[in-house]
Length: 363
Image (cartoon, rainbow, N blue to C red; front, side, top):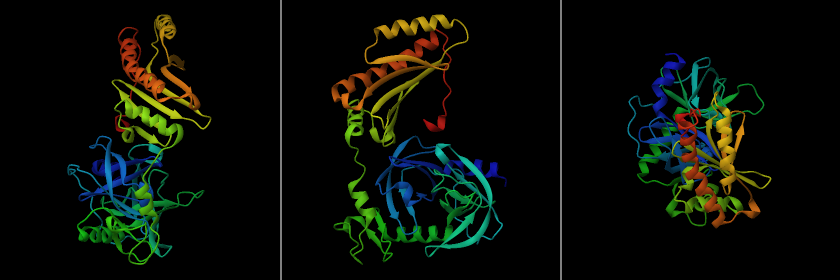
């Protein structure tokens, strides 16, 4: 099969994983989503999405910093073309396809070859590949030309030209078998003694078998806790009945859908918080009419302001973090959310504004 055929066959099993610390890729094997431990960042909950799964919260039920593997559980329907692990060895020169979401670009497939079928790194074997993988590819499947999973794309060598490494399928197979034998969830693998530890039995974040400090246990116990203005923004969104976990794009970025409009909220290092709703584009004809309308509305608006960047119309809220309060912020963001959808409809239906095209995979 060629690369496009493999992508079409496997795409329903490819998962995008998002956390406050970044994003990565996962893939479905049986009833589990397989990814890297470093992708889930020691969290118990992550946000996932796919062709068949709307943006949702899923549970990290296994975390293994030794193999850099993690398993995510979610109540998903079986795909029509489920992925499976390879049962045959890989060889130098074999063709490979890496699928993932590099830099948030959905469902990107890159083709390459196996440069070295077994490269030893820190006592583990890795498949060295020349297929282009980048941040966001981590945790995604490495496939052969029969669309079988031969590895998990795990890391790259920085500042090198297409020098990537994938954890071989046999480590994944071993880990799935060991995890399922326990018949419980929330399992952590001790990187020192290699035992699988039930999280509920861990005390003070130490492995009860060998006494090693389990950093992953500490991270999972603490979870992600925003602070300062970031915490206040999330409190404001929560007060508006918005699921902050689903809205969160990073530690300082959120996205909320409001009808046909999309509100992006960003907190910048200079202390500025901007809530932006990118509405429609200005039409080619009767531009003066839409300009006059926007100027007249700006005189009426409180908290918010219309602006035009190139040919895109924005409705925005801007404030310095030191001036943001829960009460004022709630009013401003509520206005932004409700008026964005309302104004988008008016501008499109009455002033012939051009409706934006959106990437459905990213909604």
